[in-house]
Amino acid sequence: MSYGFHVDAVRCIGCRACVDACCAQCRVPDELSCRTVTSYEGGVWEEAPDGTCSLTLFAYFISVSCLHCARPACMAVCTEEALRKQPGTGLMRVVSALCTGCGDCAQACPYGVVKIDPRHGVAVICDACAAVIEAGRQPVCVEACPENALHFGEIGDLQAAYGELASIPPLPPADATYPSLVLTAPPALLSALR
Image (tube, helix red, strand yellow):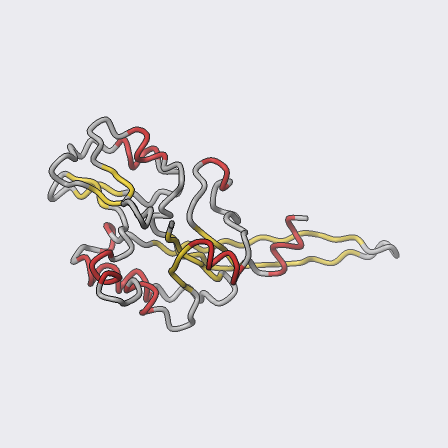
């Protein structure tokens, strides 16, 4: 079984409540939050059969944290084996006692979500609030979202409920690391990508 996140880019309003909840839970400053919110916008000119043109614009926010990839690039470059996937859940974690803080994992992560804590000299990565979910709750970022744009659960269940889309701009192609992620994209973006 592998757990992951669903991010609804239609519902996300960019409020960063998820980031604030993460910082409070992990007791870290904003720059070390395991979750980030990014905005993305674009548009496409479309020509109608009569020669007139119209512009389809889109703008959205996307909230990402560690995506608990099936093939984590961060784990592949860790010479100390300090980054590990948890058996039974597939969730990533850092073994702080083994981490040297070299930063190779942060550089390798195509999502830019692995960070190095300069205070302690170790990698910081989202473990989906492991202690919180063991207590039967959802990760704090999911609980904090006022728009219900974040969901957490078994990746197969999330795919059954929301589809299998795992990459939209500005995220890299999903086939590099196979993230445990399901996305709901704005319809205008999907039209532009066709």
